[in-house]
Length: 219
Ligand code: UGA
Ligand code: MN
Image (cartoon, rainbow, N blue to C red; front, side, top):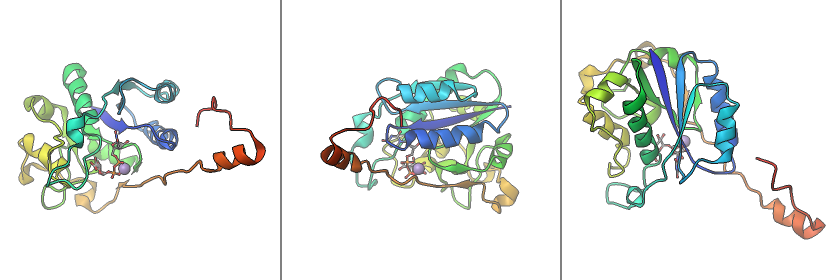
């Protein structure tokens, strides 16, 4: 079976670094399709070039986060991220995926042990006790996605419940889950965050030496 790896991504100074790291991880995993969805109105050259040189099977999509997804509610202390992008990927998968397979949601800045992807094949969700998992903690069979055609990520989900809200729509209950990674005793994915980078010294270079870095060099 094929693994469809869905990655929402947005423009920032560290985007290329994060996507480069993830792409090198994915090079080590057989039979995947990397579905990268930009939070943008159009595809960017940075992502286009990165994918073209990635040596991976990929699909490049884009979906700008809708203003509704950013609305504040009592249940959310901050908007969920990557919702409209993951839904765009699900739409594409339902329409285009022919083989059997599973879908895994891999944010662009996490760290993935490649053994995770051996675990992914053949399971729906891998969760501790309740359906309270991070995005990186479960995968969904393609069959289940097709059987529940209306299931999608909902920006209106309460904080911390984006994943559970989605999984419930798939009709999955606790007993349906297939725990992986030796009964959830092995950690195969890390929620890492790249530090926000600063280019404030650019202003100093301009002020002190009266020149700037070459803006045509991709960072
Ligand atoms: C945590 C969870 O691990 C995510 O799965 C969850 O979507 C997110 O919280 C949430 O708030 O909804 P966190 O590291 O805090 O993740 O979030 P980010 O890594 O900043 O964003 C998650 C994904 O959405 C990333 O792939 C990121 O590139 C993308 N994103 C983020 C966008 O597409 N647009 C944005 O404006 C921000
Ligand atoms: Mn993250």
